[in-house]
Amino acid sequence: MADKLNYIDLFAGAGGLSEGFIRAGFNPVAHVEMDEAACNTLLTRTVYHHLKGTPDFQKYISYIRNEGVTRKELHALLPAEKRDSVINLAIGDNTNDEIFKRIDKLRGKTRIDLIVGGPPCQAYSVAGRSRDKNRMKGDNRNYLFVQYAKYLEHFKPKYFVFENVLGLLSAKDKDGNRYFDTMRDLFRSIGYETEFKVLETQEYGVLQNRKRIILIGKRGKSKGFYPEFEKWTPKATVTDVLSDLKSLKAGEGNYYTTQYSSKPGKYLIQSNIRNGLDFTTQHIARPNTRQDLEIYRIAVQKWEKGLRLEYNDLPERLKSHKNRKTFKDRFKVIAGNLPCSQTIVAHIARDGHYYIHPDIVQNRSLTPREAARIQSFPDDYFFEGKSTKSSRTAAYKQIGNAVPPLMANRIAKKIKELLCQKN
Image 1 (spheres, rainbow, N blue to C red):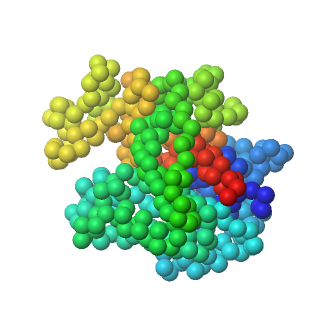
Image 2: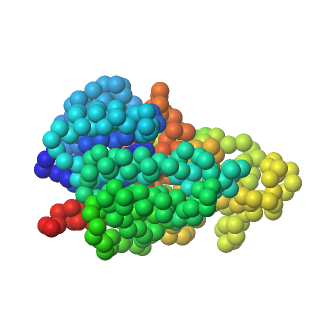
């Protein structure tokens, strides 16, 4: 552990941010996450990294193919400190002391170089505020940055990386103060200068229109430390990330093993999405009602003419929502001929209407694997459920909430350079 740069991942989710840092050579001392299904995913991915390159890696393959290895048996292959590194607790005043105790035991005398993570974004997101009658004012999640600060005070990393939605720049408390300003003032008061930029994922190899605030903090009072991340805009379209997957219709697919329908294109290799296995998992489509499928066909037909479907344009017999004034684009096709799709968000766990496959023959919404690919997760990344590993809803939720690993890796490489500089 002492030979690598060590970090803690707070509000870790399924580990998209962490995946980027692990690829850059960082060592995860601990992941802290309240969702049990996401913690199962983190443990399964920890097994992947622990066994990769060893003869026992076949046990990981057997597990994700559902060939006789149970989740309990798989996770038991980890050393105790790696099993304990995934901490399934909500961050807060009632649990922080317990979490500090566990992480301190894991790290021993090893320093923590970095803390990464971003609190849940619902309280800051524009969409979240628009749906809430109080516009999220008074929501405790608005102040999770206060908890984040307590981890900075306890572990004193040299840097931290805080990720969140654009809505954080405009969200205000009941007195009209921006949470973002309050947050930065708090970080400064405990010894960290902060700088930030709004990053667009499509500039870092992710075929998705997704903007996020990346705030970087450095211990001390120096300024001008925000790095320039290396950009990559591949010559690819969204179809390039979908085209080698087996064609499915609504309700079809296999949760555990799907053979590819063709060889990978250039983008899939360059992005590490296709990274050596001859199969993928979780390529299974939702079943849909006849009404939904009819709407999907109309949406794709319109898109093929360069038009987006507005809900009010549908025939009356297909309109089942009373709200006709907002969210008029609730049915939306993933634009296969464009270099990036719309943002994949956790709402995909509820329905796939905003994520309609561009192939009218398949006539369905995206599978978890397709959504994961658009988020730049590799095909050997397995998303777990809570009590069972075959939970499509849990997979969608984790994928939608994740930081794309490709962008995370570009961030990680530059943070590594900063940490390795001699002062």
